[in-house]
Image 1 (cartoon, rainbow, N blue to C red):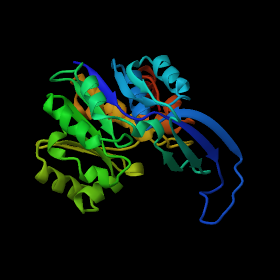
Image 2: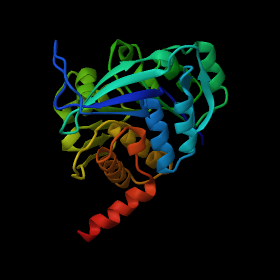
Image 3: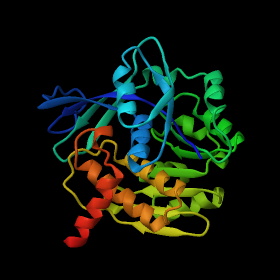
Image 4: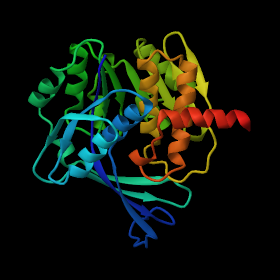
Length: 299
């Protein structure tokens, strides 16, 4: 079994602010740092740090050396990363005093994928392999469909949510990871249980993870429903927390870890991530997560 994370790579410019900038406002920032990120890169790093061997596919620009270095430094195979002229994707991230963030995304090289390149990358994978996707690349509907045609286990995190997601046929998706906003848009419901009910009625084959911020997360499939609380920590930066959850969830699924234990690991990994600065640098290794559980028992 192989794991392919086909996704974005961004350079993140993170600004510490007293509050999010309002329309027409000029605001002083009291700190600025540069990190590597992008949902695709973050998820690849999370998969690797959780303990999986993972290949990353995607595009970087002429400034992308920092992104390639971050992937290889974290044990991710970059043989399917391609380079373009021009700029890599980047973000402008505001982080306020409570640790909440606001993100402006520029797609750059991430949005230059061709169907021929999709076919070339997917030719190296076969039935039973995992294909991890999110919505920061172009041609997402094609990626979903072509992955399903090859018999891959297609995992979709439909973020950022826009009109492209409506073009993706979820009958081709095996695992759907969404937050409460995405769940509302996809189902037309606000109550978590109702969101899950609607989506499973439409797509009974799905495994669904619904993250609910401070209220934890819900898991549902045709025969099982579970709730997982958060592990309370002092929040420093929420950037990358969802990607951390995704990586640890796929690790558990790929390794046959019982779902209750998988969700506990996801919650702890995400808690550790939000207690640190940055996106991919904040993602913990599996040893840290297991050690945190041991410390939790001693309290």
